[in-house]
Amino acid sequence: MSKVAIVTGSAGGLGKGIAERLCSDGFSVVVHDINEQLLNETVNEFKNKGYDVIGVKGDVSKRNDQFNLVKKGVEKFGHLDVFVNNAGIDAVSPFLEITEEQLNKLFSINVNGVVFGTQAAAEQFISQKSKGKIINACSIAGHESYEMLGTYSATKHAVKSFTHSAAKELAKYQITVNAYCPGVAKTKMWDRIDEEMVKYSDDLKPGEAFEKFSSEIALGRYQTPEDVANLVSFLASDDADYITGQAILTDGGLVYR
Ligand SMILES: NC(=O)C1=CN([C@@H]2O[C@H](COP(=O)(O)OP(=O)(O)OC[C@H]3O[C@@H](n4cnc5c(N)ncnc54)[C@H](O)[C@@H]3O)[C@@H](O)[C@H]2O)C=CC1
Ligand SMILES: CC(=O)C(C)=O
Image (cartoon, rainbow, N blue to C red):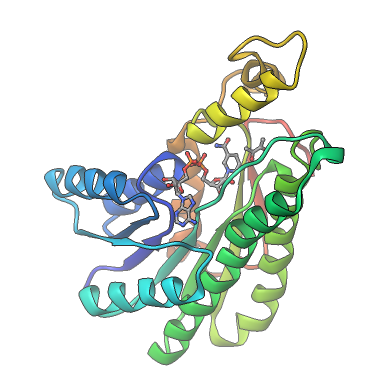
């Protein structure tokens, strides 16, 4: 019987890289996203590669959608082993321009989404009477608070905090809760961050905000989805059974904690 993983926001970006890696690790995978067209494209691409996947559309900020996601995954594959709370969004603005709308939107997706996903997965693990692994997308911005990324950084600090508290409460069920903290990966998220940072700057040209962040990476290159997937693959494996409550940096040497 193959292991089963759900990865939220996995039609593109880091989530897609994580979902593909878990497929090649032998998992049956539920690919999930709010973007239905991209979701269908990714599911078809994975099926053509021979991977055992289904697609479920949903919005992580809606509690019912998160419980429906687990239900659909279990209806198809019979059980659940790993739930990756990957979906997240960005926002760029000076502190004095942070709006109520920005705060509500980012917290509802990046934080509420992680809480609801964790609750849905944990209920399933408990009812299965099995161990289970919950793996959350944090960030270097969950360890360091960046200028122009104040709201985003606050959401990722909240993800780290919920990773700690959920790990403490769920350990008695043999459920582990950990987080991966990427650095600077060239996905659509960074394309948007770069575009916004350039708008707010007098001297940055398109691409230069990304280059500026990347130039500080000790290992000398920006991150790929595969770099992130390497860590998530380990956290999803039995080799990580004794690790819980950790928010692990994978950033090529950028933030040291
Ligand atoms: N790209 C980077 O350098 C870094 C990314 N991260 C985190 O990694 C995660 C993935 O980031 P990327 O792949 O770069 O982002 P991305 O924007 O490239 O991809 C995110 C995916 O999530 C989906 N999504 C957005 N809102 C959703 C919602 N409400 N419900 C369901 N799906 C939704 C999008 O449609 C998209 O397919 C995020 O949590 C992000 O904060 C952390 C550190 C660095
Ligand atoms: C996108 C991200 O997580 C940053 C800038 O730390």
